[in-house]
Image (tube, rainbow, N blue to C red):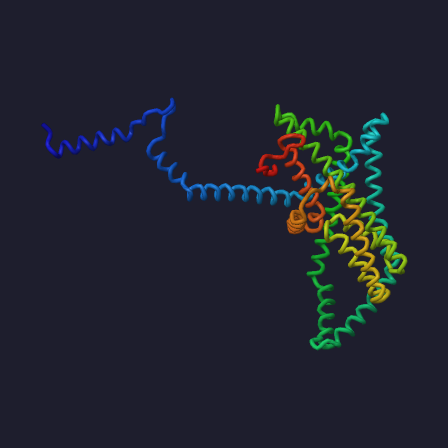
Length: 393
């Protein structure tokens, strides 16, 4: 017979062995160990579920931040490729029309590419030529306007003294002649070099997108099979159609804005009417604020050149043109292209501006439109993703 001490030792050894043995199988599968079961129970309650979701969100945010940071580092490459994709999608109907006329692909590509380059060059030349041609008058008017503004400031109760104005002017002159301004000029030279590099890369990539876009897309679809292949094809078609339709519709609306405001500036004899109209056209690619900003600049020029009455009339022309394109043109030209809520557009503009400045503001809305279009065809040609479907209950 065992004593109490020996019996306790034996029971302890038996309990230790039982804890090491696997638990019986349930439905043909071995169950988890006690430690794994306890860990699963700890993560399975409400607090554990909250911790799991928080961890997943953190991982997604870290990955997103890494992607955004990588894109910003490689912006000299990413932005030209993105712009080339937008131009290729915009002029895809022209390419199809030329190829339907049995033109060789290389010749059709060269024709479209030269047309795009000529359009961009013409816009830049009009702005540069008009500014140089009227620069003397504008500078004289700017000096006169500054003198008038300074005289008006002197009438305010909190106006700075003449000595303070002189000190501020001397500070600006000192900054313009200092090493800091020189380093900024060198940075500007670097920016010009990056711009030229990106422009050349965009033209080269655009050539291949126009000529071999279908071949490149089929190559990218090779890893997909079955339903994944059908989904990828839907996504590609939707992205190209959305980008092209958005740019063409926006260009038509911007042209109406520029022509309407330009005619008003010419009638009122406002200097720099042509470059201001072209600038309005370019700024109109930024939703909500672009056309308004261009009209504001036109009103400021009219104020300096012709006085407050002319500026008020320009503001009225800008409001009239904006109402025309907002209530008539946009619903017709872009109603089927850009079905985004105003808040989504505003958030996209803010994010794009924070990440890439003016260019980010221009590209943010079409990218958001493409993302929404992809969601709309995720599960079928007319079947959105499950979570984006309307609730029928």
